[in-house]
Length: 331
Ligand code: NDP
Ligand code: GDP
Image (cartoon, rainbow, N blue to C red):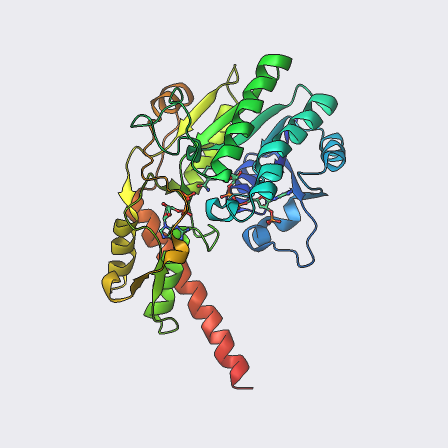
């Protein structure tokens, strides 16, 4: 029988890769989308007609109950969130409502309508925050450093709690930073690769940055969504760290991206206090031995390959946008 999956956050980076992957596997994919005045399907344009769209918002339990009822899913992937750390200080309550409390909404909708469905919660390495051990693994205590990180800790524990309280098949994937050409433009990798393209093409002259010394364990989103699926195919629900086991500074990211197009980042980068955070996560480095051994998960794309792929895609996109703008100006 054809398997059915419900994906929240399907228009985001991970949701779009996951939807592609599930469609490829023959799933019937239901995507939850919140209503906006100007719908944004950029990440899913190529598969838009193959997704069964459901209207709903993570903060609205009634809409989630309806979504689970309609989709009758075998698997639920809860990827929707206010996902940008920096935005969680100016919008702490919204972040708490969406990224923390709404996980309970989604779990309740599943518990009430389809308690046998397998549930994936998108947890985050930001929960480790001011890390108490390195590398970080499933047993490492949490010490979040932002309203986002605090919200994700709630989402993680409520998922564990529903597994233990109601015997639901609920997994939490503790994913370290993962990027792609579909990453939001405000995240540091994409901000840099987009700027590199604009600077190279003469459209932008400088790049304003915050802390360049922080270290992150950056992987490719297309590799990470496979781990989500693998978690839901196991005999027992459990939690897993997903990471590359390698870390790089923001400075190294700049070096790789700028030098790839023959530029020196030091000629363009300006430090701007606006991008320095009230509290920083200095270092994240994951140990995903458990995922490798139990899930058989592997990754294909390394750090340099990832950044070069993102620069290549941004060069193409920025060039096309520039051509379009020139054309409009000439008319
Ligand atoms: P994105 O920001 O790209 O996508 C977030 C998605 O959530 C979008 O589709 C957005 O819809 C949707 N959304 C936001 N608020 C609501 C709401 N109230 N109701 C319904 N949908 C909503 O995130 P990613 O794809 O990068 O990440 C996926 C998940 O994984 C997130 O939970 C994130 O916090 C988590 N995560 C991500 C990591 C990463 O490095 N990428 C690392 C660890 C965890 P819209 O298009 O309308 O805005
Ligand atoms: P995060 O790890 O989820 O917060 O992912 P980001 O990509 O937003 O940030 C990664 C790191 O880059 C953090 O330590 C930021 O402080 C640092 N950083 C430095 N300058 C910038 C910037 O201009 N924008 C962003 N988003 N991050 C920056």
